[in-house]
Length: 405
Picture 1 (cartoon, helix red, strand yellow):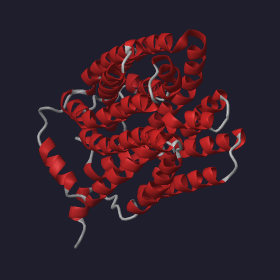
Picture 2 (cartoon, helix red, strand yellow; picture 1 turned 180 degrees about the vertical axis):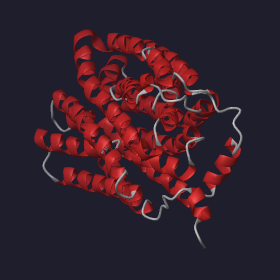
Picture 3 (cartoon, helix red, strand yellow; picture 1 turned 135 degrees about the vertical axis):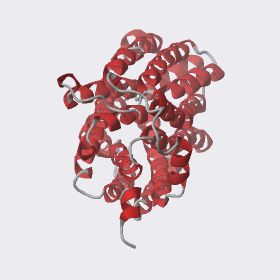
Picture 4 (spheres, one colour; picture 1 turned 90 degrees about the vertical axis):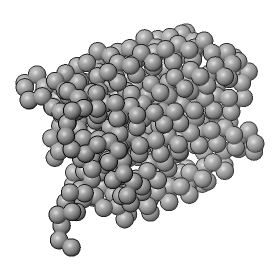
C-alpha cells in the first residue's frame, strides 16, 4: 500500500483514532472469552478441555491465517481484509452462541473466529499504519494502537461480566456479534486514501520471505513471540478459574482480567515510547525476564485477593508491551512493504504458543488436578525468551549492506 498525500483530514490523530478503535473492538471481544468458560461448560456439561481446545484452535488458526491476511493487505489493500474479517467475526460469534457440542464450538469459536481475528487485529492494522505514519514515529504509533487493544480488554471485561450476569452468556454473544460489525465502517475510515501496492516494482513477497528466513534475528523474534503467546493466553483463559479453584470469588477473577487490561494500556504505550529511546531487543529481554519473576513470586506468596490484584497489575504492564517492540523491529529491519506478511509470520509463532498454552492448561489440569506444572513451564519459557532477544541486530538490512566490512 502507498499513502495518499497528507491532508488535514488525514491527520495523525485521526489515523490513530480509527486504528485504535478497530483493535479496541476486535481485541476487547477476544479478551472476554475466558468469562464464558465456566457458564458454557456447566450448561453443556463439557470438561474444561473442550472449551480450552476450542480457544486453543482459535489461537492456532488466527496465527496460521495471519501471514495470508497480512499478504492480502499488503498486496490488495487492508480495507477488503478488514471488511471480510468483520463479517466472519460476527458470524463466528453467532455460531458460538448456538454451538451445543464440542465440535460445533471448535468450528465457530475456534476456526471461524480465529480466521476472522487474523484480518482485523495487529498485523493488518499495523500494515496500514506503516504506510500512514512517518518512520520516526512508527514505534510510538504502534504503542498507541496496542494500548487501545488493552483498553478494549479493560472496557469489555466488566461489560461482558455484567451482561453475562444479567442476560446470560447466550445473549451476550449476540450483542458481541453485532459489535463486531463496527469494524467495517472503521476499516473504511482508516484506509481512506490508501491504495494497494500490487503493481509496485521491487522485491516480491517470495523474495521477502527468503530474506527473512536467512535473518537470525527474525527467527529469534519468532521464538520470543511463541513464549509471549503461551504465557498470556494461558493466563487470560485459565486465571479466573484458577482463582475460583483456590477459593476466591468470581468477582476477583473478573477484576484481575480488568486490571490486566487497564495496566496493559500503560505498558503498551510505555513500551512504544521507550522503544524510540532504547534498544528494543533489550526492552523485550527485560519484559520476558520480569514476567518469569512475577509468576514465581505470585506462586510463592500466600494467595489473597490483594496478591492476585498485584500480580494482575504487574502482568498487565508486561502483557502486550511486546507487540509494538516486536513489530517495530520487523519494520526497522525489513521495511514496510511486506510488513503485514512478515509481522503475520512472527504472530503465527505467537499463536502456536497460544494454542499450546491454553490447551495444555486444560489438559494438564484434567490430568493432574492442578495448574502447577503449566505455571512452571511459563516461568522456564520466560527465561528462554529473555536470553534469545539479546543477540538480535536491529539495524536495517540495507544499513548492514552499506556498512564497511
